[in-house]
Length: 295
Image 1 (spheres, rainbow, N blue to C red):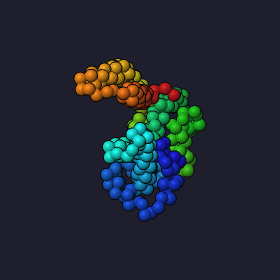
Image 2 (image 1 turned 45 degrees about the horizontal axis):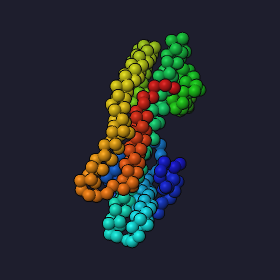
Image 3 (image 1 turned 90 degrees about the horizontal axis):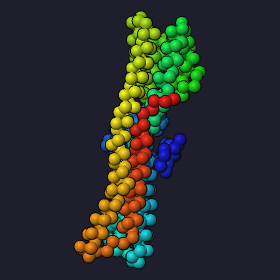
Image 4 (image 1 turned 60 degrees about the horizontal axis):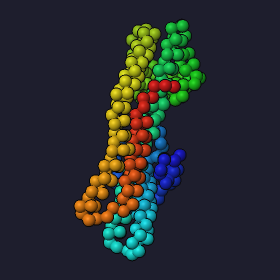
């Protein structure tokens, strides 16, 4: 398994030299959440080894960008200067920090994607279960049918549950285990409601109807909230795409005229590239905010 942008695979990180693990042990005290993120993402590696691999991967990126910018500035100036060295070192440190932060948060991103995959199909699976239970099918048979249907990760979760029940586990105990291991808050709440109905002897049909209605309302609310939030991001995008680059370049030209400094084409190119990168980042962010409400 490989974490995106990390130069070490999980298998190679597992075999990292024990003389370097102390780096991860020190970092684990600062980034203790990595342990839980790795567990939620089902990445089987000790947090100390993962943090050590993340440190050396980010360090390699920092050295690469330091070298590239140092050579570019050296070719441009034709000589080694302390300013070039300091600027290149600063750029290397910035990219080291960026990639190390990315390595730290990426297991959490994987866990959230896994949970989003469950939430995306959960409502449709529960509607199917409600129809089956209303038709007189037992809860276990309905869960078996869900596990064999094409509901993505939800089917995988129910397949593991039905396997435990078939092996002799009670339904309420298997449901409790699923509630403890799932990454989805919605599936966890759904499981606890089913457990409460089973243990109290109340109607499963009524419990499933309430759960389906609650999830439907939440999805409708999520769509409305996203539509309202999207207006703000459209305004921010227009500012980054048009206003900020134009005003920034104009401001630099005015300063150069007043101060006597020249604004070369590299400044304009840098402003355009910076605006382009910010637009791509904003588009990715807005895309990640889309509510997962369709199967």
